[in-house]
Amino acid sequence: MMIGSGIFLLPSVMAPYGLMGFSGWILTAAGSILLALVMSRLALRTTRSGGPYVYAREAFGDLPGFLVIWGYWASYWIAIPTVAIAFVGYLAVFFPELSQAPMAQAGVALGLIWLLGLVSLRGVREASLVQIAMTLLKLLPILAIIGFGAVAGRVENLPELNPSGTPFISVLATTALLTMWAFSGLECATIPAGDVRDPQKTIPRATMAGTITVAIVYIASTAAVMMLVPAADLADSTSPFADAAAGLGPWAPKMIAVGALISTAGCLNGLIFIAGQLPMAVAIDKLAPKAFAKRNSGGAPQLSLLVSLILGSALLLANFSGSLIDTFEFLLMMSTVTVLAPLLVSALAELRHSWASARSWAIIAILATLYAAFAIYGSGLDVMFWGMVLLLAGLPVYVLGRQRKAATDTLG
Image (spheres, rainbow, N blue to C red):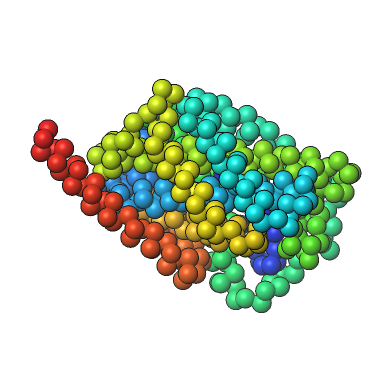
């Protein structure tokens, strides 16, 4: 899930920040590894599904746990249209007329969302098989570009150090937030813990191995694209990896575009799957209507999935301005902020667990907390404001859930 839409569009989004943008990649890679360590440590303490929600609720109580899951769930249904937009950007390689047709872009994105939604509605096994196949296929074009960039890349194509002229700290904060989107998903292995074999060993291994591998792939592929595509062209590209492959021959851009389409579709499939798991975890704890916990014959939480799909579709239509890159960047920041907040709370939960008994882990938790807070700061006041509005919108739902839980407990 980490290697999805982010890596295939981020070289264009990062181009205005020049070589200084690599400071964001390095900071984010280090911060993500710290967060992965924290999530791996927390995963040792439970076999329950829910990930950051379970960790926050066990450490701080019902309300913090609910706000974490509310914000975290929002990050997924915000991410659903974000990734669908990235898919459309690469589809324009095959259908150039899409680049100038905003309504058609929105229609294709909606169609993809609901097509993959049907896969998840069929059941957990079907969604996981699709995910495995797409993961294997999407690595091929990325590795091809890394190799091509090492052989044919030109240093003169690299952008200036800081073409925007923005102060270093501001560039670092902004690029740290933008690149954090590409690492979103590092915590995903913790969420379906109840459906994972030997979760207390499998989840930490998957989380750490995935995060480290992805950090190496991201930094190497971004550098390769920047050496293959002139900076001025890169900033306006909606399919930078396809443009980077042009030197391989007339067939190469389409080959890369196919890989990008597979990657973004695979990421979207995973996002939809996880978006259905989150409300279910809250409903099991009686803090949401019990209908969200009900599974269909394939084991999928049907109502949770449908609500997530509807919200993601509505957000796509509400924010599609006609500028694919601008829409992608705004939704990217919103999704990243709403996923960083639960990760920050998870780091605080680990700090609470480890402060008295394992000071080395407490230090790691402190560093992870500081990194998450810094990345949130990089989003700017507008994104932080709307992120806060999203969190506060969950309070009435929490109150209703508490009333239902109290009534159920009384009857019980």
